[in-house]
Length: 531
Image (cartoon, helix red, strand yellow):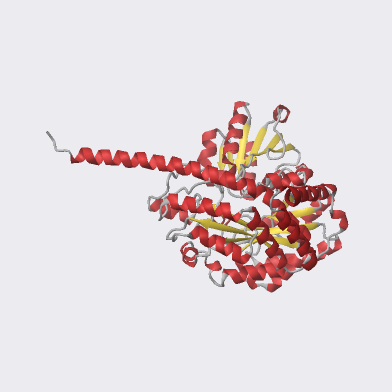
């Protein structure tokens, strides 16, 4: 069997970082972990080729002799995912798909002409697909309500990746999250009982990456890395030894809940393992909104204090924020800005609330008749208008959002927050080997110095902050410069957010106006006396 593993394009988003990645000669932030994991589960006698459309073009030669095309996608990849299915079918190829997007909305892939839907978690449904394939089945839908034991998941086929195209590698330790946030689809896809791999299993994946020559960043893609704190601490104890023995070849990034701040031992272990960055879902500083959306873990302690503890421990924080919650009061965007400035968060991921398929929020809004079009879900990212009717005017929310996003990524404010964040950051615990520094990194730093230290109007602020940091907290200079480099993306992206949200808003208001006019006309006709 000759198989083409095909990963669709991502649109520009908060995480795409095109301009920043250009500095160091990279094309994408992360590789498709889903597809290299699937590749490890397929018969290893098959001939497999991986094409990630985010880092390379799909050529005619890639299609030649292919018996089966396998795609995986998230909702944000919707457009190219469906386009690639249709293209494969035009070429007479059999197509199998899986991943979060087809699992949530399988009808979209079916309409595009897919042959096999391998849904839910692949450890359970890939064997069903392979059995059907052996029996000559030409179509099928393969599902399972059972959650797999991830200790049986094989080491991903990292050898299929083009290492020099990616800024970070990706590994996964756990699936699932113990919390119950109303808007989150992770607990729908993976459940509320976090399942973890064995520490030796994850170290085996790191061995594979190390043996293949990878050095640098690794994103632990768990949606809540600390969901099972006991097992995480067992992993970190072993990882600390592995990193020390290998001279710290990897720096780690992950996602965690805010209650990380309550566990000093856990933070110390993460720092001992060379974790440098954590993404936190703050969502909103408004406690009423947090309670309404059932994000109770964010209400137990003051959020400002929690952020300060994590930063002071020595971790850079990326934080997520949302506008558009039910019952939200006017000025939500300005309150987010104040919180971000008070807590010195350099990179706030700010979005309008989206009702994701099959979440508790989706079902509640559907019951209330407030979903705008439940049969259609757009590319859900920071350039997407709300997909439901909120409790305050949608135009007010959209304009607050656009104004706030624009201000958050003002060049001067961004540099100031980044400087304050790293000035108050605890010192790193690890000293990676000097061999981890490469020519591309040096070239990237020089390009950054030119763009932000010479060409841009904030040049004097850039140099002042850099020299002051080197004097007072020199151990974090590399992560500081990396965060400065991300500004290259955001300064361009904020214009895209403004333009696209404004265009969607005008379209929404025009449709709303036509509907109101039609309703008014109908009411007038009904009021006219019968002759």
